[in-house]
Length: 176
Image (tube, rainbow, N blue to C red; front, side, top):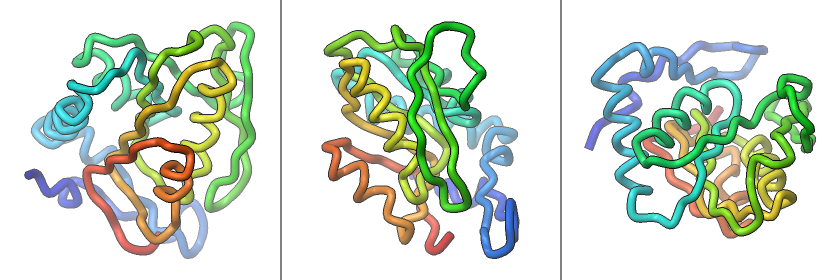
């Protein structure tokens, strides 16, 4: 089992004082670390009944695209408001340091499709919850969500599990 924490850079007081930002770009920049992370996600979900992989902007695009490719599944980008060119549906969510809106194309997920949500980090769970709500509004089913990092003390896991979504994370950090 790979210790993914060794690939993660911690940046204190970013984007504001008191936040310990967990930077996965150092993981992405290490060929062996990046491959190990994608392989771990893929192997966990290879036997699952997944139709699509949804990646949350922006680091979730990098991970989710690689996972979708390896699983042979389609990819759904979930983006910040105003970035998609077609008709969209949106969902407001709260971050640990603000409020934002994410969107996806209204026809990106068909009714009954099983979707794996992928992102770099889960903290309070707001972004992942919003993604799951978008998928549900389209008639899809958020079966699972996968992250490189879980900030366990911030409660995001409980939010997703209360929605019936299985959560996996490759590593965890205490605190924020």
